[in-house]
Image (tube, rainbow, N blue to C red; front, side):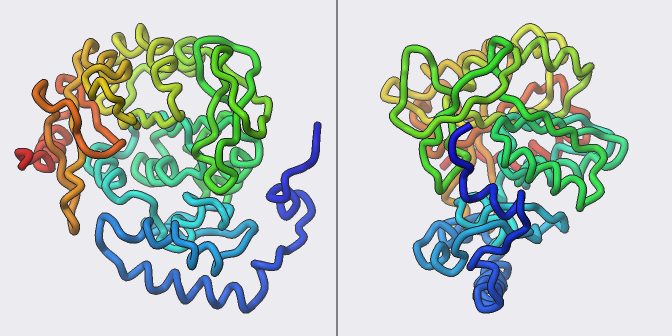
Amino acid sequence: MGKIPWRVLPILSGVATESDSEMGEVARAALAGVLRRLKTVKVGHRITDSAVAAWVCGEGVAVAQLRYGARAVVFVDDYVGRAMYLWGEHDPRITSVLEAVLRPGDTVLDIGANFGVVGLFACKMVGEKGIVHLFEPQPVVAQCLRTSALINGYRQAAVHECALSNRAGSAEMAIIDAGNLGKTTLVSEDKQLAAEKITVRVENAGEFIRALGCQRVSLIKIDVEGHERVVLESMRDWMQEVKPGVVLFECHVGKDGFWSENVVTQLAEMGYELLAYDLKKFWSTQLYRVTSEMNKPVGHDFVAVCPGSLKGDVAQRLENMIKPHA
């Protein structure tokens, strides 16, 4: 089994860490109070990624009060967890798209859920009549998700402690950065990584999701650190049948450009329109269409839209967010 990561100890034993001291809580609360007043679509997460914020937060487990009212169990020494704790958010642009697209009763797939910064908001939007499937293979993070769902009373949250891939079984995951568990990635046979590894359960994405009975899906968020291509290939037949309305995905554009990325070509072949976030906007979320002439859009987060799958009012709300790219 190997040594138990220090993060597990507070959960298993209930023993408080030094960061849970009264002085530490006061310092965290003061910094969080300042950051919560920032209404911009950026800046907040940059401050939470600073050395000062890391020093104030220290280490350990905490319950984050999120901007939209939910609470989340997080590690305050993790980048995303600290952003959730201090800022109550991670990326308001992504939250804005969810707010425009999701309605009560919808079904959402959060593939690579991490601490649930997207999935928990989706739970609030879809309500008790909807369902959000959260896929998170890291055992301790998955346990945080289950606890978050419990303390929020989100019975619509279904936590699946597994990674989605093109096969079922087990696999190694490499912890690239212990300070950002969102960067943990499946290790491929042809690319061994020099990092601490854990063994996790994997499921065939297409077969597993089909078995869940997901016949109508409003939104998929997929952030699996370079494994998106494999997951989409496995889900391709199912996606062509169900035609999920919106896919939020991460893509680090390489030297050959945006339209050469496998995840982009797969979505385009399935009829999806590709959108990017206008990162110049400071106060609001705006999207723009990525045309064939744009081969190096700025940023790593993108939106794919299947036009015929969106309800009229949802399509209009999303269209209102799209502006010509300057």
